[in-house]
Image (tube, rainbow, N blue to C red):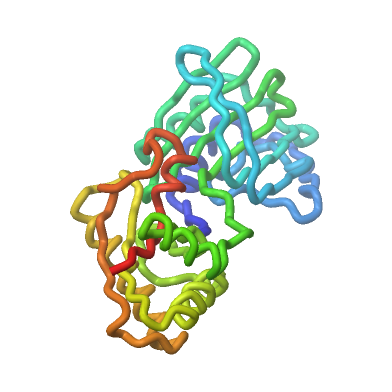
Length: 284
């Protein structure tokens, strides 16, 4: 999935932090960060700290807590960074640490979910139709963890084939295709969609008399008009690729967009929204 650039966040945190934690004339030993580690694009680090270790997980789950103390398992791309105090640097208080990150999040529309006495701070922001969850774990402030989860659907590795599409169309008149990928808010088809497109072409070539409506679906995030236009553009993009690159006759395909009007799951969860973002093949 497309990664976001958060230069503004970095500037916000840096502006809030500089001058509050490192006093004049204080000698700070600049230890190197762990090899291969750097700050997440979402935030600058607090002054006086180094990265002791870091880890990126393409898809995993992390637990957050809301204001009522309810645990929420959030799945997506996870960045884990452990910060430790540099030798000679002034240690931030927990309140300074939390306030800096909270203020930076608030400036771009984010919100605090909860804090607790064990040194946990949970926040969330929605930016460009993408949910970003932040967890600071700072029981002690000389060494603390920053977890950032960017919600995304797991990349579907197993793609249904032409035989499955054919069987489902014969049984129900339509079939869902989950192997066609687009960047957020766009209709450009990503290269990893080729396997699914080849199988759709195979379906049509194996059934010369079959004509299909290619129907684009979105989740309910965003404005209705924008989702309707987006789903139409995505459906037409699939038709165009099948005609121009897979050799399918244009007369056998027609693109339509129905936006979020035909969900197959709840839009209240990311798992449900991922199921609703799909392309369907409907027999004409």
